[in-house]
Image 1 (cartoon, rainbow, N blue to C red):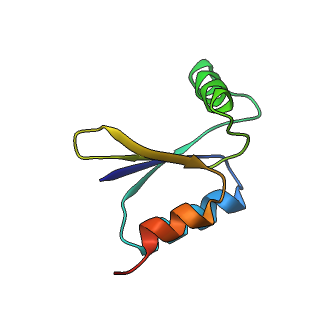
Image 2: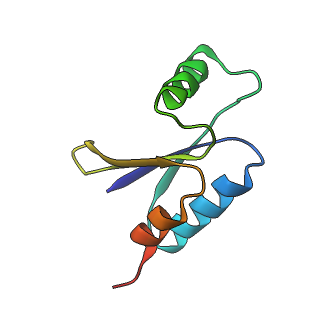
Length: 88
């Protein structure tokens, strides 16, 4: 499983999300976006997030080993974090 997290500098929700996933043993690839002066690539990403109804960061994407997206959420989603960090 691979987790990619889109964040922005100084984002407390992003930091909490990453810390929870790290503590659960996930390797999180963090992509920091410049939201105040986005590049063309960042602007396309941000527009795609808005099109999905996402209004805040982080955006977390979970992939299977074959790089198939299996889950995605945005913001500080405590239910999702609990789902991925619960101990069996």
